[in-house]
Structures are given as C-alpha cells and as structure tokens.
Amino acid sequence: MGPGLYVHVPFCVRKCPYCAFFSRPAEPELVAAWFRGIADELARLPAGFVPDTVFIGGGTPTALAEDDLERLLDVIRARIAWKNVGEWTCETNPGTLTPAKALCLKKGGVNRLSIGAQSFTDATLQRLGRIHAAAENRAAVALARAAGFDNVGLDVIYGVPGVARETFLADVEAALSLAPEHVSCYCLEIEPGTPFADRARAGKLAVQADEQRAQFDWARQRLAAGGWAHYEISNFAKPGRECRHNLLYWSGGEYLGVGPAAHSHWAGVRWGNSPELPRWQRSFAEKLEPAAKARETLVMGLRRIAGWGRAEFRAATGFDYDELRGREMADQAAKGMLVVEPDRLRLAPDALFVSDSVLADLV
Image 1 (tube, helix red, strand yellow):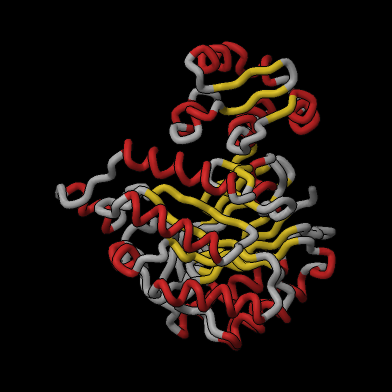
Image 2 (tube, helix red, strand yellow):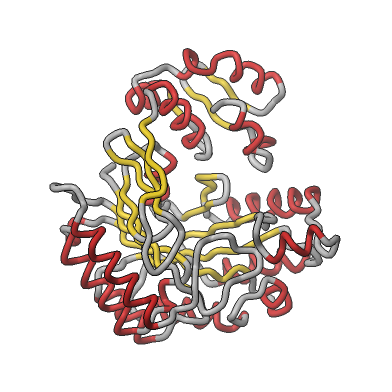
C-alpha cells in the first residue's frame, strides 16, 4: 500500500457540542490565509511523493463555497500525480452538500464521499447540535449518486445520552436502506474542552456504558447480517469498499498531513501541526526507536478485526510480536480479551467495546 495525503479543512458552519476537532467559522480572511498555508505545505511535499490515497477532512470541507472547493481541488491536483490516486475521499455534512458541490468534487477527482449523517432522527440531531435535518441525509446520498459517486460512506453515532435504544436501531435501519458502501458507527464520547464536557461536569449529561455496549453489539450484528463486513472497531464495509486511507493508518503506513492540526508519519518521523489560524506551525516532531514504533504499529493494527498475522507483522516492523509484548499478550488472552493463535493475533469480540484499555496494555 502506497502513502497517503491528508488535507485538513478547518471550517464549520457551527461547531457541534461533542466535537473536539479543530475548526473555525469560514470567515473570508481565515479562508484566504488557510489557502496560502495549504499551498505552501503542498509545495514542500517530498520529491517523488506519489500518494495512493487522498483524504480531505475537517471540520467540514463542504462548508467552503463552491469556488473555494474547486480551487482546493485544483491546488491539490497541481501538486500530486492525482490520476494515480486509487481512493480520494472527501468528508461532507448533509447540510452543506449541494448539487453543484457534489459535481465539483466528482469532476475534481474525488471518488469517495463520507457523509456525516450521525442520526436519522431530527430530535437526536438537535440534541447533537447538528445543522442538518434527517431528510437532508437522504437528499445528500441522492445528490452523491446523481453526481456519479459509487462509493459512499455514512457515519452514525450511538450511545447518545437520552436517546432510546429503539431510536438508534431505527437510525441504523434508515442508513442501511440507502445502501451505502461503507458505514461508520462511532460511540459518543465526552471529549475534554467541549460543551458536552461542561454539561457532564455540571451533572446535566451522562453516558451509560452498558447501554452504549448494547447498541454497539446490536449494530455490529445487524450490519454483518446485511453484508457490511466489520473490518475495524468502528467501521463496516461492503466487500472491497473498506476505507483504504484509514487502513493505511491502522497498518503503520506512511502519510503526510497538511493544514492546521494535521499529522504526518514519514521516513520514520512523526509530527503534527498546531491547531491554529491564520498561521500554523509544526508543533512537535519525534523519531521513535524501532521497538517503540513496532509496539505502536501492533496496537494500531489490532484495531482491525482481522488483527495481525505473524508474518505480516514481521514484514511490517522487523519484529515478532511475541518478542515485543509476549507477557502482556498472554495476560490479555487469559482475560478473554485477545485471541492468540499460532500465526495470528486479534482482539476477542468481548474486547471490541473496551479496546482502549486492552490496547493500552500492549503499547
């Protein structure tokens, strides 16, 4: 798998109260400054960098005006061999996708849309602070299909406080009725520094872990039964429609990120950009020693449902995972959290919902 390019579009019409990603309103001065910074970073990409995947994320890329969106695609295409890109994804909010923007994306080289539906129930969308209504989810998928997209993903959120299980089940059924190629089911988490965190601290909002687990277990069974294979903790896809760009992250591959708050991993060095506008800078850089990098790769790859094959992991890192974390693996296996086979290592089904605590023991 070749390297990837990530482009961060830090603009939103309105910030959702649960979101901790860096974003700002798309004020003209900030958009102009951001374009200057993006062009500068793209011009400094390493010689010979030919990405296999491109991912435009945010924020909300489709919060940009149509001419700005077209300009962004032009700037990216001018710097990379874009006809060699196998997968080019753009995230979109149903409230900001128009027929013109959908066509602009398709003509500009994008071949995959990731639509942040989150819920198909208006009351839940309002609770989440989303700018769109449920009907706009369906309209966004129709716009994508009309523009020629045959690879469409839908995001849904489960475990929202105050939302009944039956409501979430109906959300999933509504999403599947639109026949997306990909579905992401994300657990609502209380992220520090968000309005939801303030409400939780004031005792006005509380997640119910048992209910979140029940919704997650139902969703993965329903999606699998419908033909969407569970290939990563939060992600499901029709055969061959897995998100190649995200698989790059989970497999320890190389990628370059441009824009504020974007991260990169290239030539053994990892770095990140500061989350700020109108200017941003590299906020940290580190070169992991080989064993530390291998442990990180082990943990990231275990997010995949298939886990790691022994030979695959050795080829990727130069290490055997038993040498790195044999004792910890045995401990987690004894707890029923890891499945350790002669030539493969993967999370046990019971570990998927609590994967963070399991993986933390291995890194």
